[in-house]
Image (tube, rainbow, N blue to C red; front, side, top):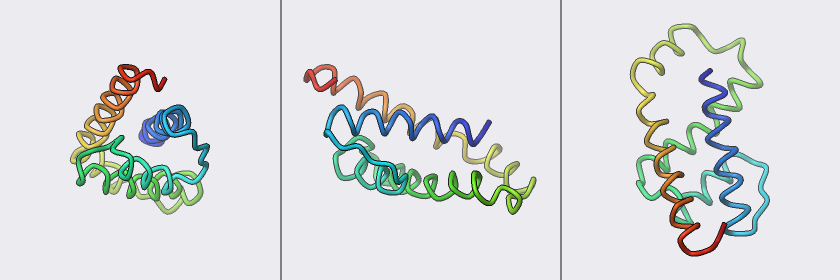
Length: 103
């Protein structure tokens, strides 16, 4: 479920970047960079976390056999709030876009 959650955040981010800024990007770290640069994620700490999540998402997809149960447990216990906060930042970006007829 962690991978799906991260993927959902990046799917939403891809949609926002395409609709608001007219850029169709496929690379996850590039999406994170644009989210920070364009203010879709305004909190600098969360923007940095989003970049880390891009790499972690790729690790979960391509190197899943290297991800340990302890690592996943630690993330679920200590870092889920960051995912919720990033989702809220993206929600706010979508609201701003709707207000300015970007979506």
